[in-house]
Each structure stands twice: as structure tokens, then as C-alpha cells.
Amino acid sequence: MDLRFIRRGSFAVALLALAGCDNAQNSAAKAVVIEGKTMGTYWRVSLADVDAAQKAALQEKIQQQLDGDDRLMSTWKKDSALSLFNQSTSTEPYPVSEAMSDIVTMALRIGAKTEGAMDITVGPLVNLWGFGPDKQPLHTPDQAQIDAAKALTGLQHLKVVNASGKQWMQKDLPGLYVDLSTIGEGYAADHLARLMEQNGISRYLVSVGGAVTTRGTNPDGKPWRVAIQKPTDRENAVQAMVDINGHGISTSGSYRNYYELDGKRISHIINPQTGRPIEHKLVSATVIATTAMEADGWDTGLMVLGEEKAKQVAEREGLAVYLISKEGDGFRSWMSPQFKTFLLEEKN
Image 1 (cartoon, one colour):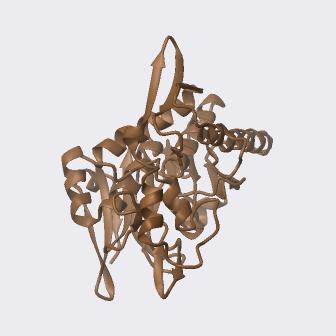
Image 2 (cartoon, helix red, strand yellow):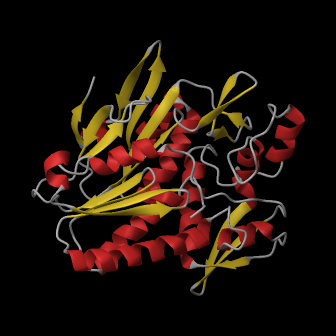
């Protein structure tokens, strides 16, 4: 798979999935675990009540569904539904699936509530800085290049139309390019959860990249526990543990996906307003929401905003948010009151 949601490191994802049991070492042997690759990242499903025969059948169903999600949202596959929309220069309504309509509608809503910080039209800037299908630049893009890319972006240039049971996307800028990597992992995780329900499974933890959702209890009859990783290079450094209790959780961080260019660290998270990678001290934003897709969209917007503005948005919107910021040689954390209701323990 090659959608390549490059916002998160695979180590953080693995920790989230492995921490899904109350006692990871003892319960891991009891849980049925199915895993694989999709969209340039990893997926993992942990199940409490499934036998070997069901596991084999589910493996195929899961991969087929995720392959379909990739064909829907990939910006790397030239024949994906999203790529075909991006290639079109028409400003007339463009027919799309209900799934595409739902994803883009959610992204536009969160984009508006974050004052454009979560912007799914930021693709030209992502590509300019080397985090999309285009190669990494040899030198820092100059202001003229940034301005040219910014001229092709803006949520105001995109809308979703729903009428008579049909859906369309419409752009008023022929060169508008939509990138769903900021919300697609969450959609895929929610989609996997629906697949579990359709197959009569009510006790599971599913993850796609950095987006996770759960239902029911683990094999020990206890809540699925999800870990938030410390923003370090240590694979198993846990910052906090939560029980998301049937909700979705997603983490966006600036500390894993980056490269060095002209002696400077370049983050994969681009600020749509400046057209440049973020440089503030917020290094990780975790959001718990009703769905993984919603959490996935909010975490990116909050990361772009930075610590103080992210706090303001979290408080205004009543979001369950956990922020980690760089402070000297260490880190400081902040959580909203809504997040505290999910917290099992916090590590120092």
C-alpha cells in the first residue's frame, strides 16, 4: 500500500497497539492479533473472542477493505478516486462516493474550527517540502516557491454538495489539490471497527497508523489500555495510559517524521498560513473523540496551532486533549478536563 501517511512514526503506532491489554505480556498470548501494512503504514487488530478459523477469514477481509480505502484516498496512486479528482481541472461539481463526501465534510468542519490550521488543500506545500509524492528538495524552498504553492491552497476553494442521495465535490480553483493524509488513518480505523461489528465481534482494539479505536474489554475482561508515547527516540517510553472506552484516539507529533536540510530540522507538519514547517515547541498532540476520524483531524490542527492556541481551541470546543511541549532539555504536558476522564495514569 502506498498512501504513505507520513505524519507519525511506526514506533509510536506499535506502542499504542501493544499497550491494548491491561497486562501486555500476559494478555498478548490470549488475544488474537492480526496485522499488516497499508497506506505506507501499519494496521493492527487485537481481538478477545476469535478462533483460528475466524482469524484467517478476517485477515483477508481486513486487507481487502484497507486496499479499498487506499484506492479511495491515496495521493500516490494516480488512479485513486482522490487522485482523479485532483487531476481534474474542472470547476463543475465532481461526483464522489458517500465515503469521500463524509471524510471531506469532516475535514472542512475541523478546518473551519481551527481557523484553517487543519487544511486538506495544503498538498502543494507538503509536496514542495518533500513530504508527498515529490522528492525531498535539495535546498530550502524560497519565498517565491512557497507563495506559488500557497496560491493553490485554501479551504474556501473546496465544498461538498449533497443532494437527492448523491454527493459531489467542487473546487473553484482548477489546480486545487486535496490531501487526506491528515484524517485518512482515522477513517480507516473507524471503517475497520465497523467491519468488526458486521462480523459479530464486539471486543476489539484496532489501529491504523496513529489512529486507534476500541470496544468492549480485553481477554482479561478489563479495559483496553492505550499508551501515549513520550516524544523521544526510545521505542517503549510511555508518557500516559488511557482507557478510551469505545472512543477513537489519535496522536500527531513532530518528533519522528522530519529530515535535515541546510543544517535545519524540517518537520513534516506544514502551517498553511506561513507555507512553512512548524517551528514552535509543541511536539505532540493527542485527541480522544467519538470517532478516530474526528480525533485524527483535530490532532493535526492542534499541532499546527501550537501550544497556547491549541489550548484555547480545546477549551472552546470541549475537546479531550493531551499536549506535550518541549521545555529546556525536557518536556511539559497539559491535558484538558475532558481528557482527564480517560486517564489511567501519567508517567513522569
